[in-house]
Image (cartoon, rainbow, N blue to C red; front, side):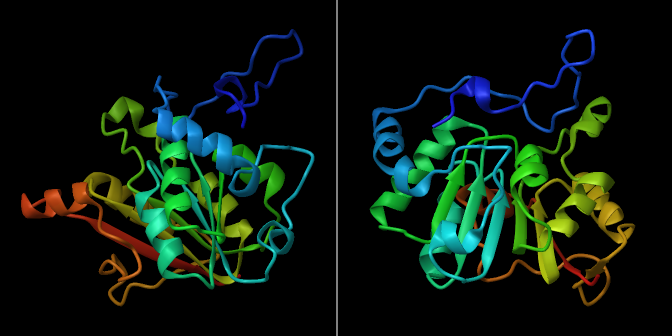
Length: 242
């Protein structure tokens, strides 16, 4: 498995200085538990994928079948991703997460369920999309509860931006689904505005705004706690139409 220094590719200018890029994430220091470390050691050869900018995925070969492929970006500790993969054995799930403890926790859970329809990668999702995912190869992309970067001066770090949404649209098959969810109302409004302004995407909401949480998206304990406290959660689904 790639080490922390490999999670982002460093681009250099002509004078050798690194190019300053705005990232939607911060690499937090996190220590692997013994269980997470063991899961990575044992399961990475079968469920993990190393980043390789020179190699594009053939998902039929990756999963040894031609089932639909869902990409989840930023799966956290992986609980909901594993639950979806468990509940939908005839669909394939590919998760990208930059934090190694989360990857380890996801692999621990996947091992307990003996999953074969799940693969994970520890790298910057933007680079993976650009260099390893072919256009029109994904049936669904889901991003649940990304960092809202709620301070105005940090809003530029939000992952849901026009250019990124167009990159996701390119990777979806025609008719493929982009599913977002957030528990920050201002970010939900930002997401909706970006997606409504994106060419080639159609809102699946009946009223042109948000959708009820689909049954297939598990409710996390933090989401449930927030709802009990009266906090809102907003789901959006858009379909690639061209």
